[in-house]
Image: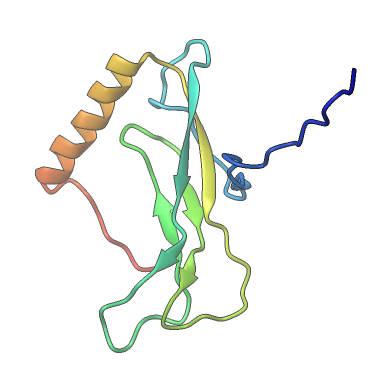
Length: 122
């Protein structure tokens, strides 16, 4: 009886994004509980619509209810593609169930619609 060699299939394998941005909080902030899953956030590039974009670009992600300074991303600037180090991926631990997390994200959207957000230049 001849045994067939099995080929290792690389189909379906996705290249994992390495987390290079420090996640400053778990989600929702100030909620204690068991770890349920992770939310991966990626800010990979910035596309400016203005003729004169700033020299350096940072994106600060601060979750609703977070008391820290937030996570700082350094995406690739398409109009100014310097060889500076980019930091584009963060992984946030989620400490609630899917219904509660969906309600938290919905509350964020309601606050955004109410104009409760800030755009700051660094």
